[in-house]
Image (cartoon, rainbow, N blue to C red; front, side):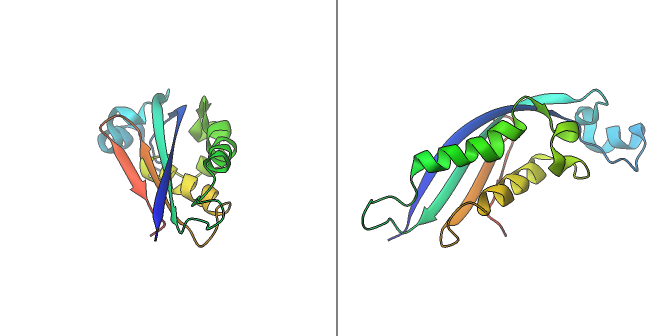
Length: 136
């Protein structure tokens, strides 16, 4: 029997989508208003899903308090109320698109979660725009 547990989290962050090797006109053409040189922000919603066999002693796939604490230390503390481009080392050279943010979060959490468990990250940049990454 395999079961999936989910934990929701939230963080606010600013970013700018752009390529340093392009001029402002080309960045505007490709990334639109998200390339604003003065940055813009989002209220990100995150869902972290862990799938595995429930432990026969506890009944847990993963203790959700542990998952909550991991999300807090690996995502919320380093990302919340930050300018991702400037203040988060992973995005110094990586364009902080929703896709790249989800992959960075997955990689940070993957190191801390039992390898026998599947991990999926769903990141909502807006209520209608979201991405999912499973490590593929």
